[in-house]
Image 1 (tube, rainbow, N blue to C red):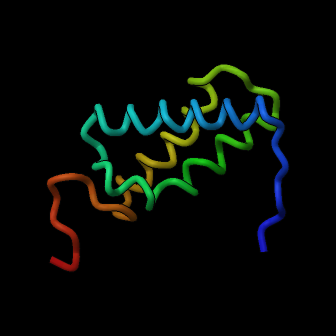
Image 2 (cartoon, rainbow, N blue to C red; image 1 turned 90 degrees about the vertical axis):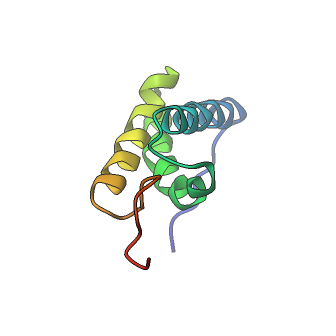
Amino acid sequence: MKPRIELEQEQIQLLDKALRLAYTRLIDASALRGDQFHALRDSLIAPMVAAILKGEKDLWRIARPGLFVAYDMLAHGKLTAPGSQSAAA
């Protein structure tokens, strides 16, 4: 079981904004469809929370590690990119 992390209200707001920023960046770059985001959500959040817990307040610096995880997952076939065929097709 993963340890429970308690965030303060300001930290939750930073996480929400950074997650929205990452989502928008992935959609705008055509790297992800909106319906694929749920598959990435937890993977995006973990490095963002780590940055917030280290005291980071800059949204891009919080969002960036999550984006790296997302692009890594796409590059290694852990998530199918928009327009590509899945292995089940």
